[in-house]
Length: 199
Image (cartoon, rainbow, N blue to C red; front, side):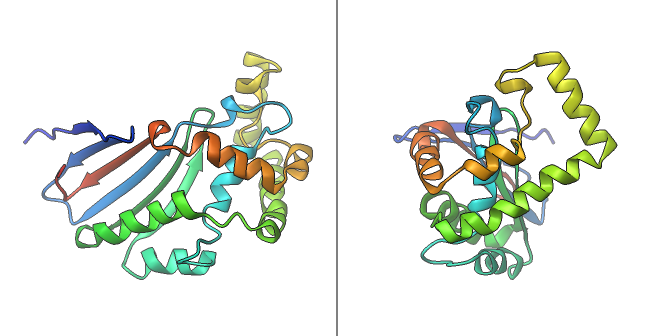
């Protein structure tokens, strides 16, 4: 049986893509935001990746990272994210009958992140440690050097996570402006695959 996907655009500009797999016992929900490191300037290099971390840190309904994780993991699912040069993706995978919960958690993170200043400061060292760790991983470091050599000193040649210095200088206003600019329905794709229907 061929798998056929469907794409719709809602009135607010959000694109919805579904890939029904009726035999699956799970469903994967992915929110793709059209901003990665390529869209940053020198001062804000690493902000998209840092923002990825911050969306897991709490909303008014789920005030900390533990509550967000428990909501999905308590339903037998997994929750994660990644940032590339082109986009940021937040995703989860849950048993198919927990789809409403999976959608609700990601929507809550996307729309209602607290972006608490104290939490931003706490997470800063985590992001900087990730950057330092990449220097100790030969594959990651080779990829970084290749990107620099190929693209040079411009956004697509810069590291996705930024530098220790750029991450250190980012403040809450940068995060708020980032959300206001890029986290909009017209710049977002919701993709759902698994035991579900387009409707």
